[in-house]
Length: 241
Image 1 (cartoon, rainbow, N blue to C red):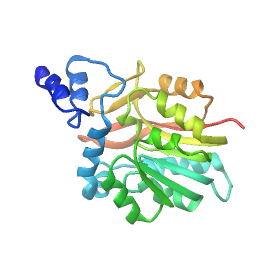
Image 2 (tube, rainbow, N blue to C red):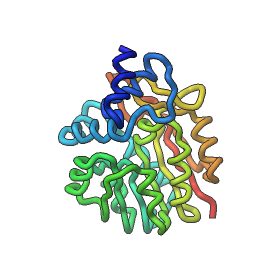
Image 3 (cartoon, rainbow, N blue to C red):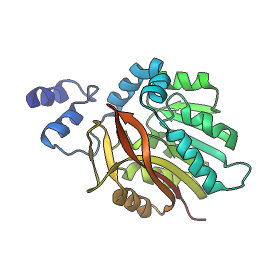
């Protein structure tokens, strides 16, 4: 099995079949990004038609609702949360539907073109872009007041690029809401659900390294996988004025 996976990496550039991930799980071959962009994009393009029903039904996905509650607490009585907001890894627009009433301008970004098609039909976004969330965010000069990344870090290893890009893209006082599949010790690793887990210590160190402070945090389960709760850390981080 290991030999076949290693050969796949040589023969198929871009790793669309997730060989890096499987090697990491089998032999502990540590990489900062075992889930390639082409693998994630292909997975979610395949999943697009059944995504909403499967995620909110069988997997009992609740990240948008929990993030909405935490953001409501953070923003208090403000009429609107953001002039400019971006939903990273927007998928079909589940978070976009939640964010729309609170944002003057809402951008959605996703790797998977078919997910973007579904999000466009959703009607929640002012603009939608197919691309890597870090690269797309870095391409915008006007700052954002709010960045959301729901169930995004589960497909990333090292979070340095994401946090640096978000911190640079936020204006003074801007907020970053995200979910993390919780890891109890260490920094990050491929977990039992074949996606990444990150520890609170690691996430909070990443935030501090780019000047973001923890405003709110909560522990819960954003969804289920194989019938087991995906233990989740929810964060609202804030950039100083």
